[in-house]
Amino acid sequence: MIRNPTSIRLSAAISGMFMALSQSSAEQIYFNDFNGPPGSKYPEWSSSTISYSCPMTPTLSGVLPAPIVTNCVSPNRAQIFLGEFGGPPVAAPGEPCFNHFRVDQTVTLTLTNLPAHQSLTVAFDLLILKSWDGNSPTYGPDRWQLRVGTNAPLVDTTFSNNPKVQTEGSYQDSPKAGALQWTGAASTNTLGYKFFGDTTYHFEFTFAHFEPTFALHFSSSLFEGKGSADESWGLDNVRVSSTAK
Image 1: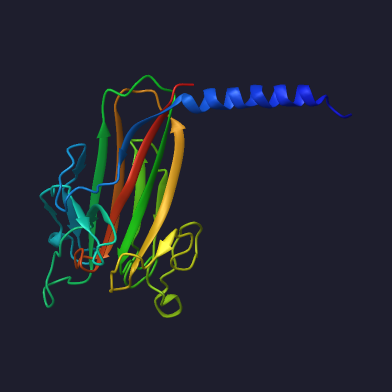
Image 2 (image 1 turned 90 degrees about the horizontal axis):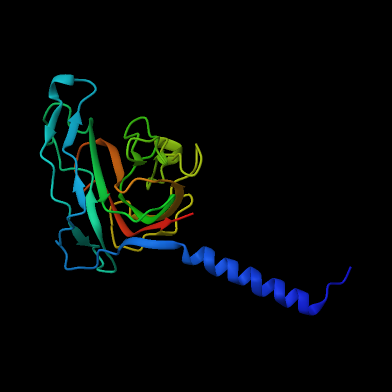
């Protein structure tokens, strides 16, 4: 059946009106590209203490004070972002358990006084910097996680910038188990990092949420313990939008 052209135009107009109404119900409540002067602080962002442990010698475990969260500039000055995260060196060459520590850090975005809403959409760029080793049994695993409050993780995976997958087993679990390094990346080697380079991933999630306070936890669990000169990560273009219906 051929529909009346007027009816088609009316339906299209009504459809467009409903689309506009739907779009207008989404409200951006937070956005930050962290493009202030390097070293700028962001009070809505905080870090946990940094814990470290040696699986072979549990008595060498410890906790370091929570660092202040600031932004930084990439080596080629192409991008300013929040970071770098991952922890400082926890042992020097020749010391017990050198190169065998696990270091854990969580960075949290806390928003308060949110407007009434039924869902939130979170979008951001994750920067995986330097020698992440994915699932390597020798140099990993190097894990990263995203969690809303105390809920189950939205992301719980490994990343790799290490191309030596055949000899070191440095596959990653993103976007699926056994993926090659860099799989699913939005860009690679754009920031000027020389030691195994850098990779940028874009993520976006929509989930039910009703409370006026929102906490988003970004966590890393990195192996070796040689500090951010060896493995680190950052965040950029973090956006949070709410939907009222």
